[in-house]
Amino acid sequence: MGFKKITDQDLKYLIEKAESYIDVRDFGQALKYYDQIMGNIPPHPHFFKRRAFCYRLLGDMDKAIADYNEALKLDPDDGVTYWERGACYNDKPFIGKNINETEKKNLLRKALNDYKLAIERIPTSQEAWLAVIDIDLCLLNFDDAISNYGSCMPYITTKEYQVIRSWYGCLALTLAGDVVEEEDEKFLNDLSVRLKWNHWAFYSINILFEELDKKGFNSVILEKAKKFHQKFIVHFDDQPLSFTQGGK
Image (cartoon, rainbow, N blue to C red; front, top):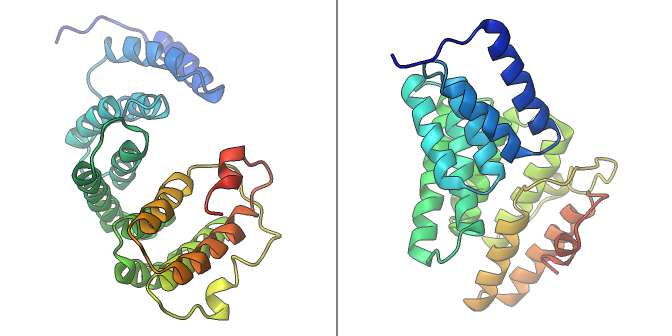
């Protein structure tokens, strides 16, 4: 098949080296080892996924999506891969250059479709459910966001994700002009739950606020939503400056 011979011991060594570079977030070096691995063995979905992960963290969404596509050809029922590819479509509008509004919406719809495909295969996926709500908000589908906020409740079991769900729900209800009940705020108001810095809707929600402001969205409602955003932000102990400024 054109593949060089590689021993199990050599393969193990290359995998360990690749993962060691991922652990220290040196994704460029990790890519070199995964390229070497994949040039010496038959196609395997796991290695396409790991290389795609490196591409994604380096911001090369097109190459990441291409590798996830190959992984799905080999294993089309892997719900996690759909979620991971959806995350690439989700990230691309916010880190890419010269992406117009139409292209942004198309990418977000692709992300939404992938997240739903992930849920079909893994109905208990907390990440996929929350990601769906995020896309609903970004596409201004507030009623859909509220519906999915309610539907996902049985599956959101960790305290950290309960805080995120509560935050999304409060945003969706507020932006839709609905009443936020005490139960909706319950986990958002629990400051004993601390969150690590991650990508959860920081960029997308701040951009959403900016877009709504430019479009002349109801300023009173928008300010209420921003207050819930601030309640979410205080769950982070280590916040980049741009994060603490967002949504104010």
